[in-house]
Image (cartoon, rainbow, N blue to C red; front, side):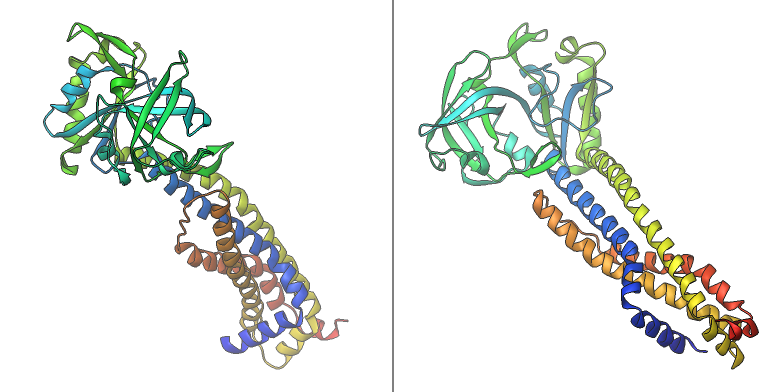
Length: 420
């Protein structure tokens, strides 16, 4: 019996038992759909986190002082140990291969107001004008703030968060310092495109409001500089951009050398803390490792459905062998060989597996799309999973149908013809 004839007979049997075939493939459909949905959401989450955490370009590095047990991924908003003085920023800026170095810390604002409308609990990032270049932030209106001026830069969500209307360039806003209740006024110098998103209870909420202000005149936290022998502003992080991506490793080494040998930060950081100069490549690899581990764990749980689906196919194929015992006897009586019977039932099991995988892939793609839309993630689908789904269907079909097909092939034709 040729393969086409086996395919025709197998397909006819599947069509004659539509409900049974549908219920049989349901486990495979659910399993494949769950796997593809979770993999799609994992890839989308990974892309979103990388774009949020990494920022900037491939030549950017993040300098911080952290506990050995802290995450390797640099914090957002300059929330690291506050140890770097203005002298440290200037010295790092002057290192060979450094295009620009900017400080980063923040001010906790109890509220922010515009046009008689207030929004509570905002974080104001304080830095210098070169920050926007280092982070690769695009202006949709206006320009960077100027150091020494009472100006701020907002991203789009921040410009739209007030009930009194959208903020435009040139308009005035105010924010209240949470530490002492001081009200600080500022003119909006520019508005930038939002980057990344925030989360509530692990659910991504899309881009969050961000406010940026110059360290002079708003930032008041200071520390003693052993090198300058005077009080200076002190920051939680320094962002460094090399003048070429080819020189990132060399610049990273020079920054480490300066921090360990002659920086003010040496005397400010706790003894148990260590300096970290994290490059974009390191951040991306760390984020990918974290999200890949999470995705693999969730996907492993989804694979249980595939195991259940394969058991269902095996079970229904055993039932089919029993139901078609006389048919097998007739086939053997007219000259069918064991391999013909084996081929027939194995092909039927493979068809059920492939059918379930194909439908599962379509459902999984839809689930991934709807899930990404629901939690505000950029859709990142990997087409290779379609091919993987078909392969899974073939493997599930072969493994689930192997024993029933072998059992059918060794049926004795005399006993089969007498079977009632």
